[in-house]
Image (cartoon, rainbow, N blue to C red; front, top):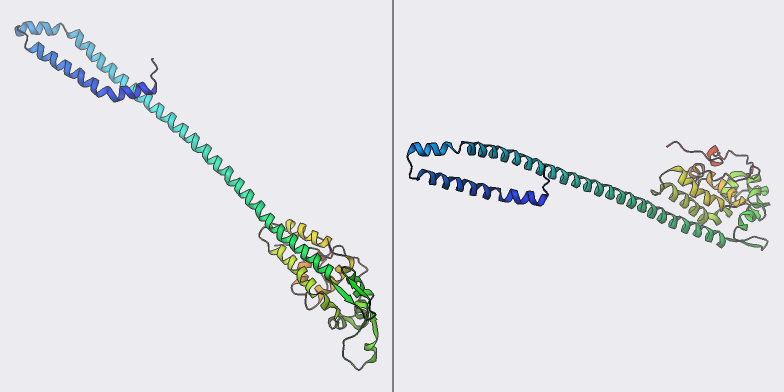
Length: 297
């Protein structure tokens, strides 16, 4: 079988009608020529019979033309199927490329979200450290303490008097730090002392950082939240943890701060011997405040 390329196939298809018209016109003219020949009918019949083989030849050629036309159509359909196959492959490659681009875009978008979160988070940590560095307290003995040392000084060293109004002279004596206030005057003495108010800004920012991590849409699971709050916990000193412990149990922190302390085990590094035994029932923390516990959500 001869192989016809696509260009030849198109040429034959475009000119097939003209070829057939020329052939029909030729046969028509030949027929007229035979009709008007100066012979008798018998002679013309005999002459026409001589072309019986030619008629059979033309019939065969017509049949062959039909077969050839069918073959051309099959060839055309095959080329069309090949074109459609190539188009499908191109569409599939385009679809895969678009999916890869979409996946890459989503990955970049997630990376940008995490970067925005981390920028805000570490800026908040910087502000937190700045608040700690700017803390200062001057005791009744004239000693001035600044920075992180203030947490220990106000808890176990500074001389204090009670703010509780009472006729009991016992209440007017001097106590050593918040530790002495808690030991002798209990929770009421702590709540009415001026010392915790020095840390209002500190506690508010501490709470806000934890809240920011918990509500951030950029963090998809608890492990991510815990990883960032662990960085904050690593910045806390021994006596900072002690102040956070009591602030979380106080009227100021029980509702909002305490649940976040328990969620992220913020008291994990606190020494067991530091909390003061107070005669009143201050409430208590769940075990998750001291040991990492994945919350049921």
